[in-house]
Amino acid sequence: MITLYQGPTAWGIPNISPFCVKLETWLRMAGLPYEVRPGDMRAAPKGKIPYVEIDGRKMGDSQLVIEHLQRVHGDRLDAHLTPEARARGHVVRRMLDEAFYWVLVYARWAEPDGWAAYRPVIVSLLPPVIGGPIAELIRRSVKRTLRAQGTGLHSREEVHEAGKADLTALAALLGDQPFLLGAEPSSVDATAYAFLVSILHFPADSPVKRHAAAQANLVAYCERMRQRYYADWKPPA
Image (cartoon, rainbow, N blue to C red):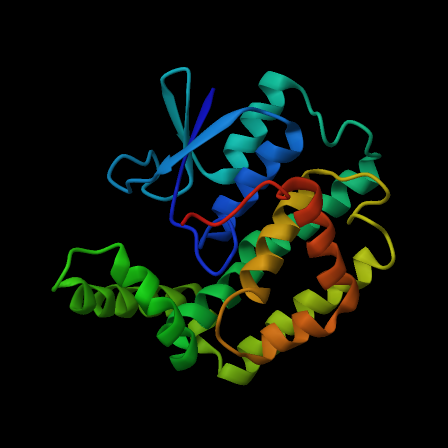
């Protein structure tokens, strides 16, 4: 059994973190049994969620966990791919993990409307009474990280255009295919689904969210992934 430690669910999707959704989706796609428990940053091997415990060993980073499980259990999802398709999947995953991720961070922590929607979730994870002030301190820290990473140095319009460009590229690569790399799902679909539901279901309006919703093939793709891998999933009561 794999124990998956992650953050809370919200907004009708499996987790507030796209990396948690990515790893859980991959586990479902690969057909590996797992159980979910609340994550604790203090116990996380890399100080972040998600992380897993397998045979008494804890491992962090969603992609490193996936690659470890591929080595142990076989490459169930990508064995059929050509070298070119593998390369395309790698590039798409890196675009989402390393670039579009920061657009999501900006939308949640820097945008006033986004923070108004995200703040209640963060406060619910913190101690009563002092949770609000702590959340504001965390927000300031995240905004400093955004500036150090580079996204926070851009104007709102520039951040929005970068996010929209990533989504336009993703929609063009998907085209009319059922999955990103063709007729059969592959591991990159876990990443793409995670980031798309994270922007489409976030309860704050933005040009990036509207652009995602305007890509009919991306919206249909998300529903196809949900029906295939999360038909049995319901938000906690």
